[in-house]
Figure 1 (cartoon, protein in one colour):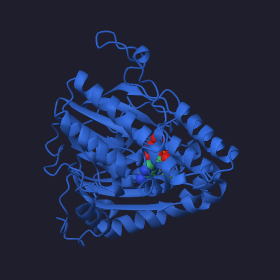
Figure 2 (cartoon, helix red, strand yellow):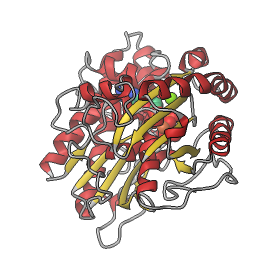
Figure 3 (tube, rainbow, N blue to C red):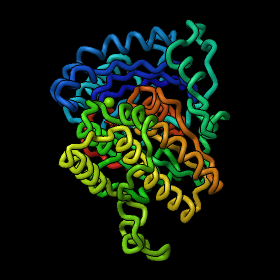
Figure 4 (cartoon, rainbow, N blue to C red):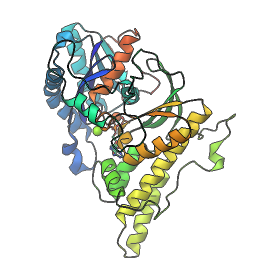
Length: 393
Ligand code: ATP
Ligand code: MG
Ligand code: FE
């Protein structure tokens, strides 16, 4: 099916178009620049920016994919979680489009879309069967970014289309690491059976990156800045705490304590703040690059070790990585290494599909269509705290 996906949960307005598991286009407009001076996303500004960007983004996506609205078989839209006002813009636009065109509408979960994007195949698109123009933007990005930009043994988008025939491996897990969430999931069916094995009990990993970056004076968004600076630092110069790794938190396999596969990043953030204060109190230069590298190592170490533990103890042998922090070079590298040591096949999306975009929404929407799931109708409301276990509304 030809599916159009709409994303507006935070500061990215995204429209993506897929045909089954093939990406045709991924058009994104971000209001990031308008939030920089505030050091974080301002909801009201984000909503207004979606309103400005939506129609041009839609038009560009249709043009790039060489299709018209009439060609589309279904529309998918992020209905949560995210900023309420931002979600409302995309949902309202999607409902209007669905009513005007008579196409079925699927209200889908942003978090499941972050990992569901890993079900797209990685084949570049030369043209499309509708005889439209060859896809440019998204597909070209896919072809080049497909095999882990940093050559990490992770395989880019499952080259043989891990969701192509609608059948997923029975032992599939997903590690979601984003701005607002950090979760390890078991996916029995991407369309309606997602189970949470563990999650952060306080800050999300992306949030920790953003807060630490602010503390180090690196600006917003912090993730990419720390990723870059960490390459010049010595990760071993300082050892920051890994949360919830002591035996008292870890429980047993038979009786998994609440923390067995959970993370905590707020103590780490405090440790970084204290470390900076100590250098300042001594009147010494703050070794920003070393701190960035050591912080990143702490985050990535504990994320990957707990994720691999959860996989091993739950018979998970294939893992999808997703979310904005999945763009992090060290996370991609260490997850690849630890998965391969544990005999877990890892699927990592190209960088362009990690942060928020419409293609991931379209990709999950296509899975729902292919599985014969009923569309959502147009009576649903966005839910800013939609749980990851609710795949579609
Ligand atoms: P959620 O998906 O949980 O609702 P979100 O949509 O705001 O949250 P994403 O778009 O998935 O979040 O990811 C944005 C986050 O990813 C930000 O916190 C940003 O700092 C982080 N990020 C982006 N690139 C990198 C990177 N290279 N290294 C580390 N973090 C990164
Ligand atoms: Mg964003
Ligand atoms: Fe997101």
